[in-house]
Length: 209
Figure 1: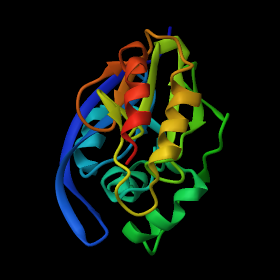
Figure 2: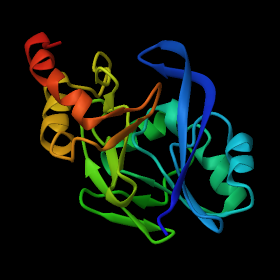
Figure 3: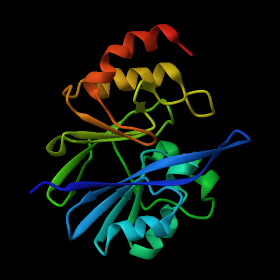
Figure 4: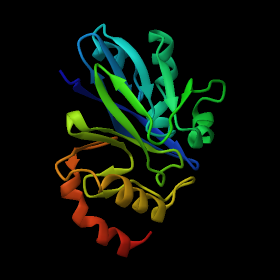
């Protein structure tokens, strides 16, 4: 049996380049009744721990290093013993939020993470952040995109460590090649599908930044 996907929304703030904004984040839990992983431990370690419902937490996967996606990771790791995984290119962003701690493991493009018998493949998709990754789970018909792809377009690229042409290339080369029916589960807001977002690519290319 494939793993199931549980979802909760946590609220907090995102801070970068001297600004702070209120945000709601999607936290995704993938697993079965015995074990799970958390994708983006945002804002509220207690709420995420409760959502695990006593399951063993095998890993905390960070789609990128912005503080709103990682702020609860050390507390959740301390409580559960789970290891925190981050792409090394986002260590500078991590250190802004957690100067006295470090992730436990590095994510790499093509790496396969397995939970409850279900494989998730790491896709390095820089642009929103240098170390941004997506997690493709073919058995679940889904891809977890963090802040790389949203309903209606790519993630923001107007702040430090981001680049618009890079994120569009990541989406074109790594995400739009997935089956059109693939569910896109994002870091904020509502889900979409690869097929729904593919027609927007030309518009993004023309728009520039």
